[in-house]
Amino acid sequence: MKFSHLNDDGKARMVDIGGKPVQRRQATAAAHIRLCPETIALIRENQIRKGDVLAVARVAAIAGAKRTAELIPLCHNIPIDHVEVQFTVGDSGIEIIAAASTEAKTGIEMEALNAAAIAALTIYDMCKSVDKQMIIGDLRLLSKEKHDLHG
Image (cartoon, rainbow, N blue to C red; front, side, top):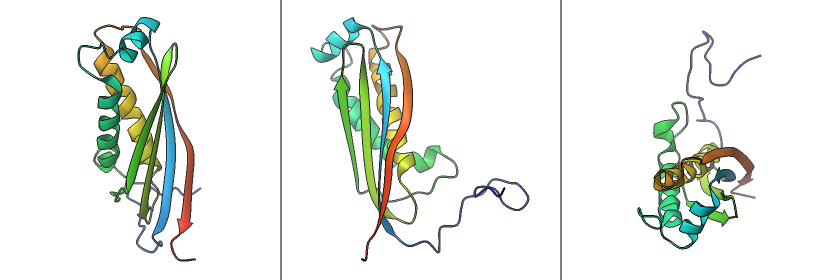
């Protein structure tokens, strides 16, 4: 079996995407953070001392998506056209959905995954003084698509 991120000597390398066509690419990822019901109530009432948890987490997620290539060593630095982050606040946690799009030679799933993860980590950071039982999990890619730009 040949691995795309290893050279003939078995050493890590960045994949050469030079010959690939630019395509419209979209990806959606999700994560979940479990919180105590009391913490959920504080978030809903905007009573967390650090500020508006979901607003800060949304901005952090967008910033995280834009910095993905700096964090994932073999990830290509691609232009990001759009990042959208949505939160569903339930009784025992928050579901995070992050969608990203680009016109590039390679996918944007790592940026969507990073956005979801950074949103969850930001929620954790903002709530850690009131909730010692938070659990971040279920980080996953929901979908990825690519479409030719010309026809």
